[in-house]
Image 1 (cartoon, protein in one colour):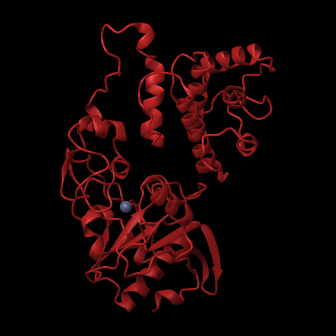
Image 2 (spheres, rainbow, N blue to C red):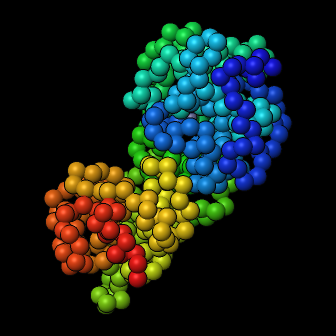
Image 3 (cartoon, helix red, strand yellow):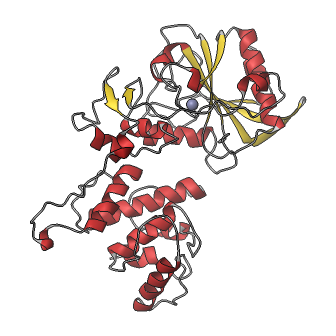
Length: 385
Ligand SMILES: [Zn+2]
């Protein structure tokens, strides 16, 4: 095979995270389908190992969903010049999950990066062009398609680079604009509610919204061909799980309920949304923290929801001006500890700082308004009990 002789190709079959094997294709490969990863190209985890972890751990797939992954962050010096590394991840005769019902006859190639924002560099363009030329020579596939040119995916923002121009190695930025997600989605091979929610990159549908928009379906028993509400799931208003006329002492706390819902949808915590601030909720919050530290800072923590020495050592400082999931986790932790930061979102503003200082003061820490190892620390004080 010509592709296996490319000097920038690394054979990692059998070495990436997996939990099982994909079955053999029952049809020959017709399409080479081009994807991007929707993760910024230099972000930690924007590589084959990162995608394998996501596909196996989060989506529950047997292994990484692509056959080839091109990694702009790993540049290799070859006799032909600088090239982005190409990871060979699955045998080409394996029917991996990447385009639902078209998987049997489609080969998945992913270029790491979010090409709605990233620009493509020469080393990456060269690897695309050379891999493409080799596959054509090898007779692997007949046609090239972007993910959103495959049946059922016209709404998807994948891929967002002009793959046809890349084959000519000129580079270009005239991506096809994604359309809104369809109102009704047909379940395809490999789908889970989590993978479906992830598909909607334009509207950001949450798993809890899919569950709410599809009261009749069992999330663990999706059937291929089954139709579910999708694009309009976003509009469904999620009612708090508090019954009218209940005693306030029995009804749980609305903010705790919202924390539990977010832990369920964002981190698959599987909590009962009852608004009670108990050990399961706290443990789920520590898991969320461990997940984010792994994802954002490549900390390689065991996600066990326990507050151990390794997790403590991995803590990063979150301070005013911070944005993102770690800030949300901090705010949720403050709230669970009885210090209401006002609103729970993703922005570390004046209110969060004020409440954090109050917390630090009450706990006898130096009140610098920063949550991190040094003040040792919000998460520590909260989680050690
Ligand atoms: Zn794709």
